[in-house]
Image (cartoon, rainbow, N blue to C red; front, side, top):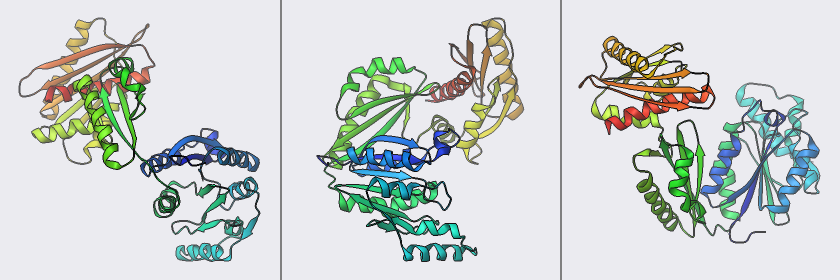
Length: 397
């Protein structure tokens, strides 16, 4: 099945996932990790705990992918069906592995606990499979070869899955598959402009084969993912840097960061570099701006305080501006910071209005920006937090 590049797919097993009660973070982590070592993930799916559903998903995966990775269903309970399903899908039988049982018993011994009889089923794997010891949990993993493809089964507990992926699975894949290309990604973050504006500015780049460009819109923030594939890391980096430069030139100051750089972290780093402190006051936002700053501050003391008010009605822009001026002035006086920012959501019959304000103690100037918002009020609150942060960012730049 392998041509120029190995192809993989991921199957998340668990009725709690397909019911919506548990968010599947394992698949996104797996996809990023595989992409980083040159394996293209083309399919991600989730199935319930029924054995025939898991087997069907694995058989479909084997028909179109070089590597099928499953997470979940390797525990000791009656609804843990991944082992049996993979055995059925690959035409094998489950066999007892005494060495796995000893590993499981040893793990319980280390924890000072007695192993239950139902843990015995964790010592079974499909015949001919490669067993992988799990030193951070009780669920051993395994790799089954079927024709030219592999099924790799990992536990659903994220901590265990990540450990085994890093220490066992990635080294196995690197040694067993010809990685002819390197895949790398970079995500640029923009703020204050909508997805349609971003699309119109870089629409010609969206048709490139490499790097591939994708857009992901949040409330007030649009991410631009640049994914390049090339024969070596140097060439891959060159492709990303070239397109990143074009995107930054076209979008200018709307690009505030890349990859793990959040807007609130960028703003706090600006304030720290200038030796400034900030307090915020929020009206009708449920504290989203203060929450972002508090988490990003992480005890540095740059963010001093956040005040949350309930929604307030205003009749016109003049009243709104007057109210915001008094609000930030009172905040600055109370907390004696270098800046005070305000974010406000005003709910109306035909839509919401977002207003943000910023007062600088050094100059006494109050900057105010407003805009309409036609979506749900929850989205308006997130928009207001991001626009408030962006007002600080652009003012300090």
